[in-house]
Length: 245
Ligand code: IPE
Ligand code: IPE
Ligand code: MG
Image 1 (tube, rainbow, N blue to C red):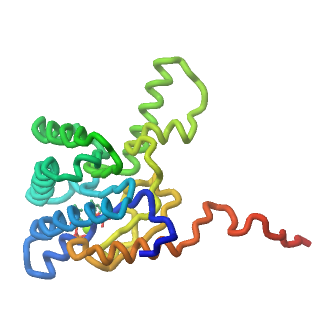
Image 2 (image 1 turned 90 degrees about the horizontal axis):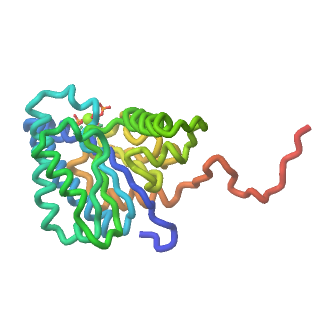
């Protein structure tokens, strides 16, 4: 890894391709999710080893409820197992899990586990976000509603600022996404962190998520390090202005 170019502060993953991975092997889609969950654990740990401050994984979207009940149950069960194992992880001491999305729809038992997972750690160095029942539009809408509620309560009629709205998003003041990685060949955002990815560098990989390796992660980080991030500015702001005639 390049020792000089900075690593991204925030990497977000759209973990896509579990179903195709299983279908390619003649297996049921759920076994793709089982393998995908192993990759999720391995890549999460690899990011922590690389000192990535914030990592966000898209685990289940607000649109994924359209899938068969058995597949949904399979995905949620895997998350359950992941969280139960998480408490045994040494990394939990300095990594804080956050759930992004509307978790109020889950059962009391599931919510208790989600709550507990978000309280582990004493000396927090890293943040691991799990986007569950998450949609970028829903996130922005709930943030707007939260601000509106405060406006009504206080009678404040000042215009909403971007900073204020951002503080009410599920990512609550975390740094914006620097690098957004999507596996599985599709080149779309699928309603993921819409606001937070405004200036993210996009990286699309043909690798199906269950096959995504540490080597692939390093390749994505290396590609990020070669990008020229201008944020609407110029490479050489002190450069000579061209003459407009
Ligand atoms: C992504 O893999 C995982 C979730 C959406 C939970 P898919 O299940 O979408 O896999 P493909 O895209 O059908 O291959
Ligand atoms: C995005 O993948 C959601 C997750 C990875 C959780 P999808 O497979 O649901 O996205 P589309 O349907 O191809 O856009
Ligand atoms: Mg998919």
